[in-house]
Length: 303
Image (cartoon, rainbow, N blue to C red; front, side):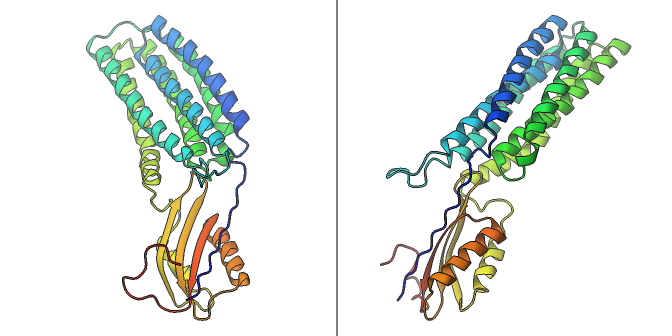
């Protein structure tokens, strides 16, 4: 029985050249958090404090995502044979968890303001939220081009875009408070902000949990991969097929292919290129067998 193994590694910059975007986004948002929190206390605005708390969680998210992408650039070692690529998945999962923890804290504060309404300075609310639209919109723009290929970058993009929209809502709310004088409106706006953030972030949380459990990455149909392998010249059977994420950017595949007569380098190289082009699978290990395995006799390492 022949055993041919194919390995393909294609590693671009793990951070997608977004190091400067992360640094600038962190600096701008950290400065704005301090200004917005101070303004929220001065204006006695629950909506501003809610937005400041969420922006602070975004600063932490950006820092974690940036740190993880830098770790992912470390080369493989004898102990970490895939390198530290999975740090990007763990950071994305932690970011999602921290986001929902922050929402809980902000919700508690909003409930207190609803039960015990106090005067709100709508002018300060509108001014600071307007600045937030500019800062968050600009930061989202920094990540717009890379948000389709990396859940970390997409997380940063969605956080910043959501913040820009939320800040716009706060501006409107501040104007309504000035116009109507309804003190509880500020707290009600906070509930709307929290609901929007929770809804928009749910997909990110679900995806990061799936990635952390080594599920097939979103966008890859395992049945389509199996049919694709079966369609390769001479392949009669596929078994022990596994597809899982190495990081938020890299996907791995292992499979056993039954191909009478075995396989040569041309077949394996063509298979590597086809998997990368069709499914963006950057690391594949394929074992080619010239006979159908005995039932129950596969699933582990063979010699």
